[in-house]
Image (cartoon, rainbow, N blue to C red; front, side, top):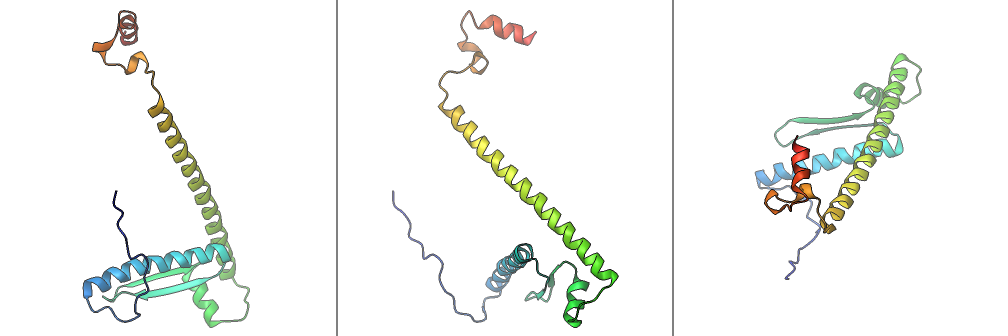
Length: 153
């Protein structure tokens, strides 16, 4: 069997992409990657982040953690403050952390169930002896046909 050789990940020149369709596609892919990295940074390092991106068509995209107001206020007022917005920020941060923990637990459960389903499918494929209920009706013998009759009653 012939294997295709790919060029793999290559360095690209950092310059404006002239083809408009390619530029839109690249923006879309890079935007999702950037927002995902920002989300991971918030989760892993417990930091406040604010990102605003404008697409080549002028459409804005944003990501703020925990809230836009808290990030902007923190940017403008470097010193610590004790206000109701701080209480709200802490509430939002705790809520997000709990939701992330819940998501992690659900993701682990889904992975466990996928592996379990794969194991069951492997066992099913290896199984040679089939039950009478899996055999076509035309292939049943005299002993099995009353079993089918009783199961239908």
